Length: 155
Image (cartoon, rainbow, N blue to C red):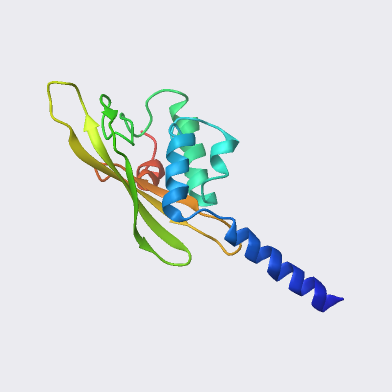
């Protein structure tokens, strides 16, 4: 009976890993469904972050209290104004069994008077054994690490 339980545990663990999206697909879905993760104090967002990054997000949410926190710009844009144009591309830059760096590049559109600039953000993903990808850090187009910024002392 113990052997049967061990085999069932291995099979179910394998199916959990098999059901996990690929790193680039995970990042695309996170962007689509949780764009405002940095300002949205929600347990729903926290299930997509590592415990460490989730703790930093919760700290930032409490600190900013719906106002400006450590960053005074939209981390996806790298600015206060502008928008993400099309096409938006997700690609895996590096990947190991437990870590992936996914870049999201897009044309940054400030206004019709300025030609779009290519911007890139990086999502640093971690995967613990028998779990799917989770956000460990987010690097803005300016090169700012949210994990680093959110760990700074509050002024």
